Length: 105
Image (cartoon, rainbow, N blue to C red; front, side, top):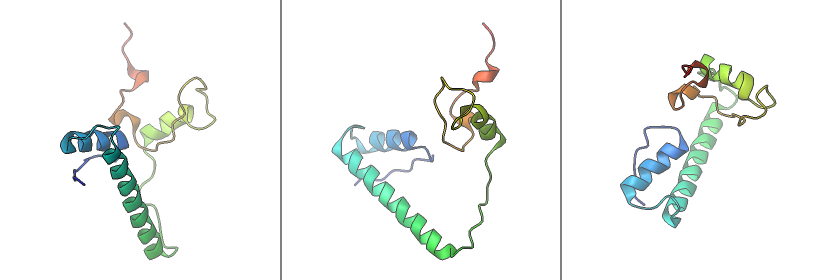
């Protein structure tokens, strides 16, 4: 199985970089196997971390102000019912422009 470095925690970025480097289509059986292996590896690392923490885990980061602002309207059951529900906790503007700061045309 070819390896690559995504340089991002986002799935679509990881898939795009892996398929480009490995020469497989995003819909290929090889990409599906790669994602299954990746998920299994991550689940294993999480289980190891939880086992080592033994009730001592304290989150090192909190949700960013940008993400909190987006989730105020776009989170579960919030004020933007015709918009997609956001479940991420990252700063949205890292990949998406801020729609509230668009210049009027």
